[in-house]
View 1 (cartoon, helix red, strand yellow):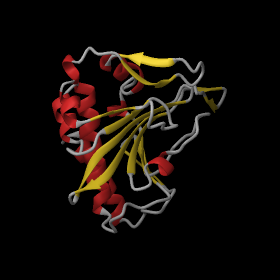
View 2 (cartoon, one colour; view 1 turned 90 degrees about the vertical axis):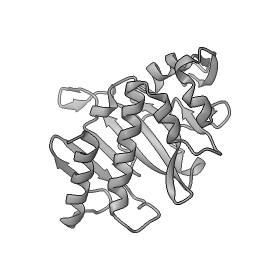
View 3 (tube, rainbow, N blue to C red; view 1 turned 135 degrees about the vertical axis):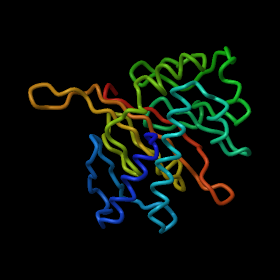
View 4 (tube, helix red, strand yellow; view 1 turned 180 degrees about the vertical axis):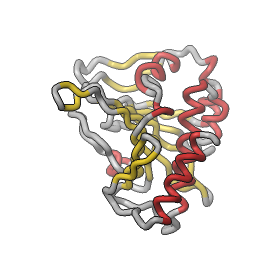
Length: 214
């Protein structure tokens, strides 16, 4: 059974057991799932399982460099915003349409994705370099903690996803930092995928990176 299906089944089991409560942690099979403060727009709890399965398929497409599959997750009329940090700034953050994402593999153009939070210098990178540093800098397909509409850990950057994308629901793939002297270090990182309704389904509209270093 594939990883996405296994995790989707875990959510369904949790729902059946009556343990879907905001802020409760579900732990099984070596990972945890957080249910956030805000429920998805639909009252059908099975939507959470479908959402997580969709999110895992996108993470695996990113991991495998399958940009054609990634482009299919984007709404055809709107782009996907890429934010290198938790603070979303629509300009200069890049926004790419589905057809542009499909061509990422051969795209060697230099883009300005935002500004480094520590220096304020522009983040001028190719798609390949940006994905290596600000999208799949760690293996999020193996993240031990998954958040649904829940920000698992905050860094120093302002969290403004709910202000910029008020209609979005999001799945967060979180890798905790290493522990030292009983306390978690700041080398944690997160990949957050935002989704919005489009023609009766969910489409990807945001790919965001967050980390403990900032």
